[in-house]
Image (cartoon, rainbow, N blue to C red; front, side, top):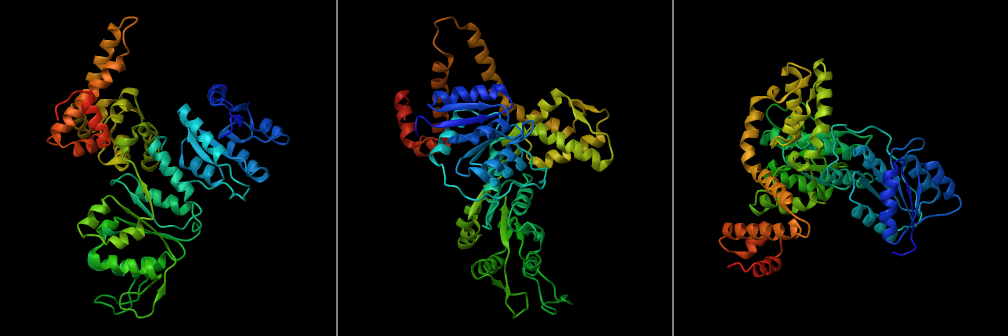
Length: 470
């Protein structure tokens, strides 16, 4: 990156412009700030920057309209879109519209600077851009958490592709919603989306469900029937819980993926397959392969692109937004007035474990809509099983409260000139973690380093630094 790189920033928020101006200037870039798109476009007629950073929602011309105009006139300029509205529509529209990157607010300043540097280093020649997505998306896919933003980015980057995708995530995390979004934002969007859950079909009927059957192929087959492959022709076939597919069906599916042809059960005429496969599972397919319960060659055929859906506990910051959406949805479904969670109730449920993930949260919102007596839901209104879950999880969370109390006491006792708290606390923390990991593994450093998320050399050095017994 050249030290004289020029960056233009457009955002109607003065504070954002100020922060980016200072950070990018300190990084050696020449920065010009604009409070609206019109003033930036006026200057673009006379000068061209090395990169543009734009907010997505501004008065007048928004960031997507600006992006579209820049793509038409100066497609070689990388545009970075940022937004406080961290939804799938914004992410997909930005990336599909030609944005270099998408940054959700609030962002880390260092991360924003790094993205701008990367945009300058990868400045690309002019090329035609696809128009931005205009259709609405499944609004249940909500998330500002970093892990969900990665899912949104993946959907956007796959929007022009027909590649096979494997979705991995626990039950209730929204795997089928992601599959729907992948289909909706794909070249096959005008063709059918067909889903089949492997765990919900008896094993002796799965092949018939997938490939169809001819009349008289087996007892009860009184008429010929199309399978899901035929129903999804030109479109997308979503195979949920692929880990539960029986071995003989795995073999037939592999043959379809390899040859592009299949036969109905009892049939002799080959049928051409033109479908995009999206598979999903909550299981560890690598372990199933190691146990010879899933074909390794089929696994590699399916695992072209993998998308991991985070658990709800890994994206707790999304719980308030999801609750707001599900409570409104439940009120409309059940013809009830929408309930509101008090601040203390929202804080309470945000710290629950939610083993059933987003599906459990959605059912909870339905329960609240029917069962809560008042419009403002207090903790006492919650279902008993959630109160029990909280009591059981408090033990595992108590160390955080203890640490917070300890830090508060220490900070209150500190005097001018004292060494920083972290200078003493971090070594103590690392020592305790190392001792616990070594105890857990019986002193095996390699296993302990894996548990700690370190390399073996790092652990060995730390053990030496702390003079710990090996």
